[in-house]
Image (cartoon, rainbow, N blue to C red; front, side, top):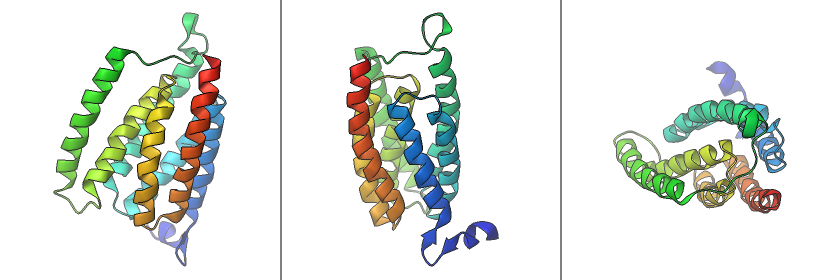
Amino acid sequence: MEIFQELFYRGFNVLELVGVVTGILYVWLNIRQNIWCWPFGLVSVTIYMIVFFQVRLYADVGLQVVYVVLSVYGWYYWLHGGTGHDTAPVARITRRQTAALGFVGVVSTVLMGLGLSHTDASLPYWDSTTTVWSLVGQWLTSKKILENWLVWIAVDTLYVGIYIYKGLYLTSGLFAAYLVMAVAGYFAWKKTL
């Protein structure tokens, strides 16, 4: 654990900086539907497991673990999820998927918030909201569904405020950049439909 403490220097977190850079590369490559987004995403989420643990955002730590699994799945799906196991195309969300994800998202947010409120977690309900809806967004991204960007726009807006409040200014800046990139991603993917 000492090595991670040494990576902090007068309020500056080197790990957070590397997570920011690899996170931006992930989204930038994702907008372009470049398969190399997935390795950069895996590096970023691994780093953020550590960063979020340090500031007691436990739901976000768990989220990063799930991101690892969804990133590996997305990497595979993007390469082989299309017709005849070709590259997967961008798709639209169905009404059934919207209803199911909406229901699961709301129920999971409430349950996770209740669970986290019985720990020393900081901002349990806000943390659970962003965590659950990030999972929804990442699942949609992994399935190459256009509406993933709309979920990310909403989630990134909340994250900016949370991270400013927690003093993670680089990460807040990252999520502000993600917000802008999510808008760009939506229009870029919509063109390919």
